[in-house]
Image (cartoon, rainbow, N blue to C red; front, side, top):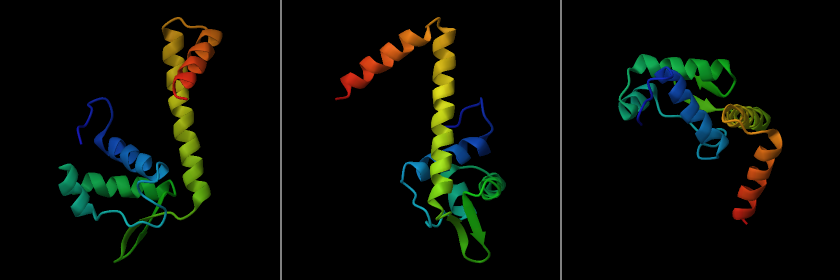
Length: 120
């Protein structure tokens, strides 16, 4: 994984895990790699991964079971809520950037409509 200098590494790793969970690449109930395994895989300090897991647990996305590991929540409403929030953030950024380019809402709507037609 290539890390950007614009965000702290632990947040980038959190976002990676969240994306994998909401996309279904990692399912509810799945065990995440150990702190050591993931730190070795991503070439980061184990303390960084520990912080990632602590933050994800604080957010309710994972649960750490002592001696067993860290597991993704099986609560589908938590996962769906995260997915909706992530989508809303993407939309907000998109609209903000489009407005910065000078587009009006009607123009944005037309462009999105055209793009959706291309996908059919």
